[in-house]
Image (tube, rainbow, N blue to C red; front, side):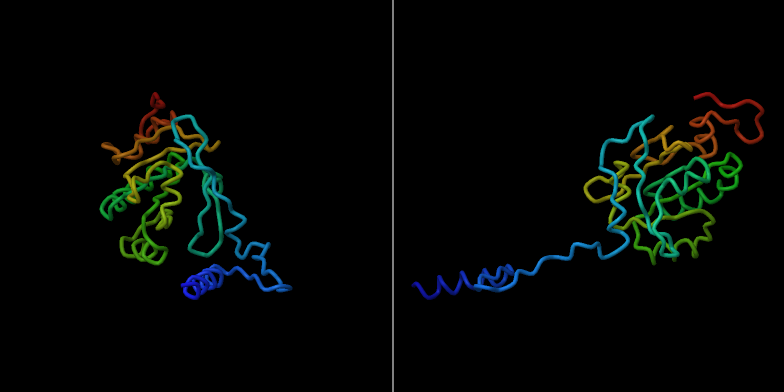
Length: 197
């Protein structure tokens, strides 16, 4: 009975990597990060509401460079959408020019691996930023993740990284241009007066 028990202990010590031999050097894990991503710590997950600072998430561009949300916002306010179908991605593309005329940058975050996201951009002919989020890291930071499934959501983020409008659980019933104009108190293209909030 003693032999099987001691064999079990040795097996557990070996399988866990514990080295109990006298004078044996302990192997320590590397102290230096092994990739650039290790330097890009993500903001903590919290409930994002209107008026809150948007999580300044990191993402890897299709060119391989690591960026953050503030790099997009440097170009102007951002419309960030999650959970869109291919048809809804095309709908957003049709509104791209109107959004750009407001100075708003449309960005879709898709639950696809980078290669599949890039393939969808080509296949659908999209002309705006599409970010891959197959691990739902970005969706989780914006509370657009429900038990591992992306919840259709949108967020209007101003130039100071503040959330000006949002909705979780559905895409907007009306057009994105009007939605962004109202959220940012900008005139709708073709109208002379700004819209009210």
